[in-house]
Image 1 (tube, rainbow, N blue to C red):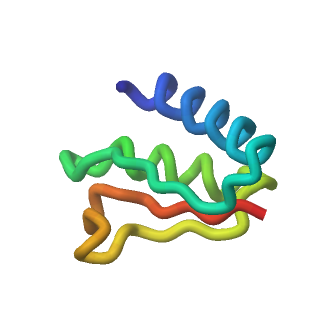
Image 2 (image 1 turned 90 degrees about the vertical axis):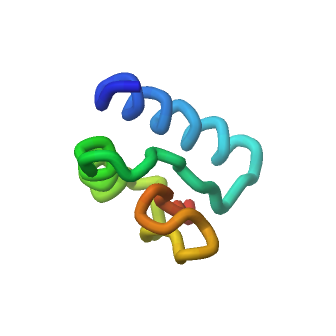
Image 3 (image 1 turned 60 degrees about the vertical axis):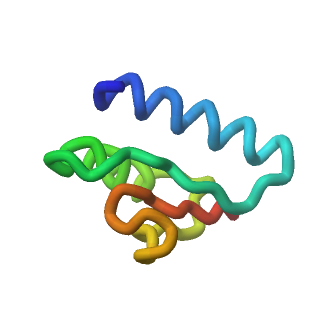
Length: 71
């Protein structure tokens, strides 16, 4: 996916997760150039539904994964 597609997908998933009672999920964006990770990070900073987020630990996928915790 490209940045805009990914942001729409993440936004829709956050809404679905909130309605379903999911409080934590992982976004697998890969490592690559880091452009997609940066776009996702910028979006998550502005989302009122997101409590916190971080890059994955080494056993979670490292910098290729963002772990998101919802309110």
